[in-house]
Structures are given as C-alpha cells and as structure tokens.
Amino acid sequence: AFPLRNWELAEFEVYGEGFVEEMTYITQILDFGRPISWGQIRWSGELPEGARAEIRTRTGHTPDPKLYFAPNNNGDLDQITLKEYLKIDALSRLPTQYDTENWSFWSPPYDFAAGLRDETVPAEAWQDGTPLLSPGPSRYIQVAVKFFSDPFAAPRLDQLSLQLGEAPAAQEVVGEIWPIEVDSFEPTTFTYVVLPSFAADNIGFDHLEILTHARVDTIEAVVLDGSPVDLDLFPYEIRDDRIVVEFPAVKGEEDSFKQLEVTFNAPVLRFGTEFSSWVFNSEDPDQIRQQVRPGNATFRFSGDVLAVKTPVGGNLLVNVEVGPNPFTPNGDGLNETLTIAYNLREVATDRTVSVHIYNLAGQEVVALPPTRSRSGQFRQEWDGTDASGQRVPPGIYLYELSLNVEQKERKMGFLGVAY
Image (cartoon, rainbow, N blue to C red; front, top):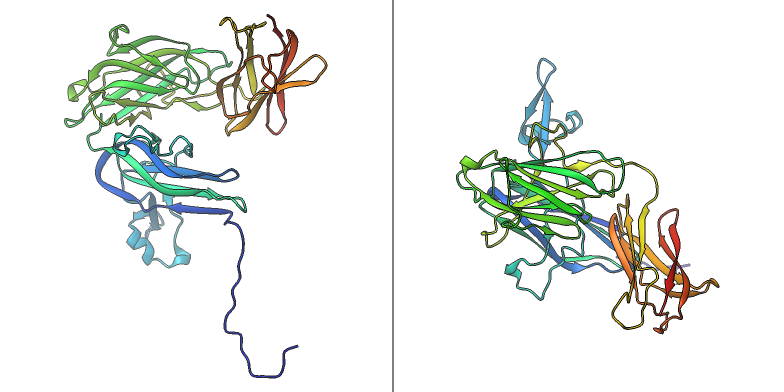
C-alpha cells in the first residue's frame, strides 16, 4: 500500500534482451535515368550462427511496379495514375495489380556468403560479389532485405553496392533450352539457343556464361549463325557449376537475330532447375554481364524457357561412388586418399551432409568434417587416418554417408584399406 500523499507516475522504462525476430527493409525505387546493364551485387556485414538474411532485387522499366484501375461509367475498368487513385476514397479503391510487363518479380534470395565484400582486393576492381539475378538492361531497380534473428544473434548489413554498365552489350538477349523435361538424373544432351537484338550504341559480346548447377560432362558444339565455331581457336571453360564459351564477337544492328547455339551434356538434379545465362564482351574493362531472359530464341523448339523439369520424388542422395577401393595410404603417392562422391537432388536449402567411418565391430574410426549443401555434385576425401590422426590398420571398413533432412537419408557401403 502507498502512503497517503500527493504523488504521480511521470514515466517508466522497460528493458529487454535479444533482437527483433524478423525485420524487412525495402529501398525506394532507384532511377538511373536510362536502361543500364547490371553486373555484380555485393555487401559488407555479418551473419552469425542462428541468424539469416535474405537479399532480393527486382528491376523494371517504369517508375512504379503497380497498376491502378477504376471503373468508368460503362462499368469497365480504366487504368489510372497513382495521383488519381489516391483521390478515390480508401474503401472504394480497387486492389492494385503488379505490372508484370514492365517489372520482374523479386529474385531468389542471394547467397549471403557469395556476395560478401572481399577487403583484400580493391573495391573498384569488382573481383568480389555475386551476379545480380534480376534482368537488364533496365532503368529502375529496387532492393529488399529481410533479417531473421534468434534471441541472441542478429545479422548485420553495413553497406550494399551495385555494379552497372551504361553501355549494354545488347538491346535484348533471349534464350531457351531443349529438352525442357528429362526422365532421369543422368547426364542429358541439351541445346541452348541465344538470340540477340542490337541498337547502334550497344557494345556487343563474345562470351556466353551458362549456369548449369552441376558439372557439365562435355561441350559438343558451339554454332553461331549456322556456322560451327572452331573450339581450338575459341576455347571453352567447364567449371563445377557453369560453362563459359567464346565465339566471334557479335555487335551492331547487322548482327541482330544471329542465333548462338551451344550443345552440352549435363545432369539435372532439381525439378525446375533454371539454366540462367549471361553474355559479356571480353574487351569491356568492367566485364559487365548482361542476363539472358527466357523467350523465343528459335522456332525449332516450343518451350521458350530456360528451366528443365525432372522426375519428382525418390531419393535425395544419389549416384554415390567410392574409390579407389581399396586405397593405399602408405605415403608412396599412389591411391593415397579415398574419394566419396555423391549428388544431392531436390534439396533447395542448405542441409548438413556427414560422413562417418566405422570398423567391422561398429566402432567409429573417424567422422569427416560435415558440410552444408543444396542440390549439386559433391565429394569428400579420407586420408586413411583415425580421429587422433594415426594411420588406420589395413582391413575392411564401413562408411556411412548421411543427409540431415526431415526424414534422415543415408547410404552405407564397404571400403578397403591396404598397404
């Protein structure tokens, strides 16, 4: 009980611990004055364990991604301006519509680690960052950042940069892939067709980079305007998740609608995998890559898409190969390490993959460092030592490869160590 006196509660303060669980920041629509090409996107910040950040972009050709409508005297809908829309009573306004003809949808979230600024290289060199996924050339861009925190760990974004080129490689580049549906996860022969259109001030391009997500087995042919490209004079590059092909430069209005066709063999490990691609000019000092958008690049194929469908269902952990088996970690430089190769399919978010080696008594010999992966091709190596770093005795061992998903999936098999 309070003593009888005149008093009042002027203010009080409440303190809490931890971070807000979820927060979204969306930039204003950024206007660059004219259509430009987008290169890389990068940022500086921290992503502690337990926290997550989703960075997305969208690009457009008009100042507003929304369309506004109002009924006319005949009961039909007329498109109106935002200013006219705001004059209508709020309860009488019709829902807005998204302008899909002039604006892209929000991109998939960028990999936070891939876009981190590398402080060891000059900022102006743009040797860091990750390709901007939204289509260009375009005049407008918008960035959205969504933070997910746990009570005691929160992501931090210090700054974000965009790389752009004022002289696009082409006015537009469309592409399509065939076939658009496969019935297995084995390597398939694909044909990728690109069709450019040029304006007088475009710088042209002489390289095409195709994101394949898995390592391509072979590139069979590159054809430009119906003529095969000499792959000895114009060598290609096969990387773990993409290919880069080179060809004689196409530039200027006279080269508009010259088809570029690439035939290659690659597996598809996830339903709806999109084979995104970019063109660029090797003489451009900034190496700005212009994204190829899905469209009708050839009348030979009816898909007009860059995505490939695969069978749905089945195992997520497939094509496990172990070798050399047996292997001989005796220091002579031959067959020193055991490689466990595998594919992950239909894994959209990072999941933990672990490898454990056991002796025939069921005792764990060693656990290899776990990895976090999504759909793709992977490999782990064992040097024949146990958890203490000592070389294991010769004999038969059991390996267990496991994928940590809702229903844990694992593969097991035998391997041999010999000296």
